[in-house]
Figure 1 (cartoon, rainbow, N blue to C red):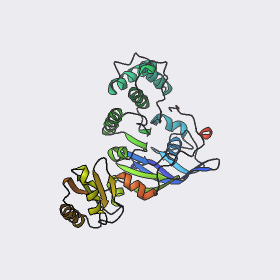
Figure 2 (cartoon, rainbow, N blue to C red; figure 1 turned 90 degrees about the vertical axis):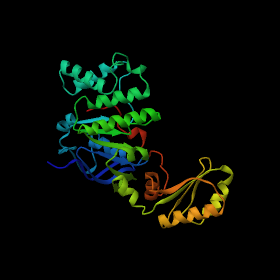
Figure 3 (cartoon, helix red, strand yellow; figure 1 turned 135 degrees about the vertical axis):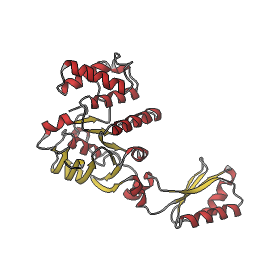
Figure 4 (cartoon, rainbow, N blue to C red; figure 1 turned 30 degrees about the horizontal axis):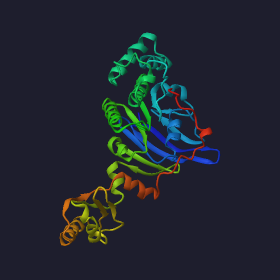
Length: 330
């Protein structure tokens, strides 16, 4: 048996004149979180729909837990779960009824479907709300219900397509905790996200996708290491000294200085981390600038992504009429 839960080789997919995937290849190991990072329109959701048998690729080959997504769709579907960008729940059914319905779609008997529904409701902290209709749930509760539905069939691989889109910070953190719990239980997860912090927090390995291709792949630390530079980070103690700090540091380092006036923070890429840090301390002292804090830090995934793509995240370019419908579970 392969150590990889997902293997993708040269997968291509076009929607009319738009090339959504232009030859994607990647491998996602079993029992880990594999992150697909990229802006809207990069091809992340298209790849997820191919891997979950909702779309056929135009070219290339992909397997999930050893099953070909093109030729073994029926045998693969009972082995996977999917939670899309928006909670695919029936608002007029109760939480429990939604999960029992999903269980029946997985061909569970009535008794087993009810038992499994109660198990996942408890796991996701929804037991008390199980008898309420889903339309009375908050956004965070609907997302938890959608994640619970994706687990009813005990999938070997779970696909989470931007699972925290539209959630408030607290609900996002709660969802992160649930994802970590799933991985701790041995699940394999493929996670797509636009949130760089989310990929940094959750993914064991990350592929950066842009214009339908994988432009970089590795662990978070490996991707950050590609920039081959640290940053000198300065917190200025007094607002009135901020301009003096900027002037003192303006020609130091190895790139454009970044200033956040409201936060009183200055960041600059270092040529030589320790040496530039020492120079920054000396210059700020000579300029009589009081410093709240100063130190070296590694680049963030935001900086990695901008360095790799050289642009801001674009709007989605896949025509709406050509996108498959949301809500297909298996």
